Length: 367
Ligand SMILES: NC(=O)c1ccc[n+]([C@@H]2O[C@H](COP(=O)([O-])OP(=O)(O)OC[C@H]3O[C@@H](n4cnc5c(N)ncnc54)[C@H](O)[C@@H]3O)[C@@H](O)[C@H]2O)c1
Ligand SMILES: O=C(O)C(=O)C[C@@H](O)[C@H](O)[C@H](O)COP(=O)(O)O
Ligand SMILES: [Zn+2]
Image 1 (cartoon, rainbow, N blue to C red):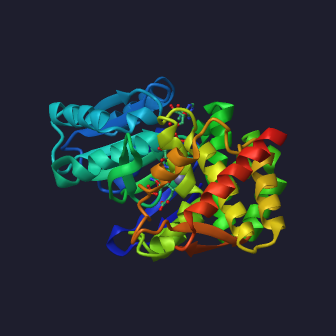
Image 2 (cartoon, rainbow, N blue to C red; image 1 turned 90 degrees about the horizontal axis):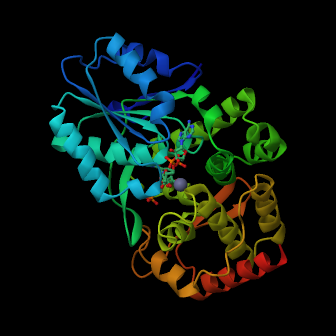
């Protein structure tokens, strides 16, 4: 078992990473002094519930906790105001009070949704993350919680840090292959923005990671979480540095929105976005090797790096205008400087973006 700390003064919390942790959920709750007098709400989804819900409900009730559970439909479409309201209804009907705990048992969708419920229920209750996807090494850390608006990703949300992250890596063994790849996209991102040696390691351990080799996975997740924890500890509410975690997201979020939150998985959209960011950087004078290396790394994991031809440039651009980093009429981009290092740039012109979208469509025709 590895423990990392997210250092945020009085809002600091541990990330426990290891096997068999869901069975010990009750013990962790007790260790953290979480009350048994108020009901706990577990939010999970239709894929995760049959696999792990009984385990967590059992572990908590064996320790004397009263548990209420809400199962939402799996998939990005559940990150909506409508489902948010449904979860709120379960919380109210289940008698949750101000000392209650909301648990997110699942991937980033459940994490972001349950986290926003925890941030808003009675103006804020305790939140515990129990991630079950690779991607959630990113989403469970840092306190960004949100639901989507049909026009733009994560538009309605808050910063609400969890009490702890209980990451039972045994759960990852049941992930479908496409979700494994999509989750590894954010792991690669952590290497690309912060740590060239880690990015290189990802490239050297592609097969081990794709095969869910426990040792490789444990190391990769620990490294990814520790990059995330360091960045968040420096800039909790994205006043500056934290924006680097958005590498690939300016275009990626636009692709998710225009795809109706169903065509691309988050990690896939971000992979295309990271290829696009590298190409913008090259067109601005960086060595072409930067783009070649980025794309080679992503493609090694079977991730998409070209722009699907059917996507309309204008639609991508107008969806991009809703980016939360858009200010004073400028779209802020995170651009690579070299592998392991990025810069925050606010003078990228729309024409540069359109030209890269077209180049990436052409690349697609060669594949
Ligand atoms: N808050 C943040 O900082 C942050 C960071 C990155 C991504 N995100 C958000 O996270 C979301 C994507 O998260 P995700 O990729 O985990 O998606 P997800 O939660 O939809 O999970 C992916 C799929 O795997 C299934 N699943 C989950 N765990 C499983 C398991 N152990 N075994 C079998 N199936 C399992 C789910 O039911 C779902 O179908 C996006 O909405 C993205 O915006 C948030
Ligand atoms: O934690 C962050 O900060 C991130 O940017 C991590 C991203 O991987 C994640 O997708 C996040 O939800 C994006 O946030 P947003 O503020 O751009 O909606
Ligand atoms: Zn992301």
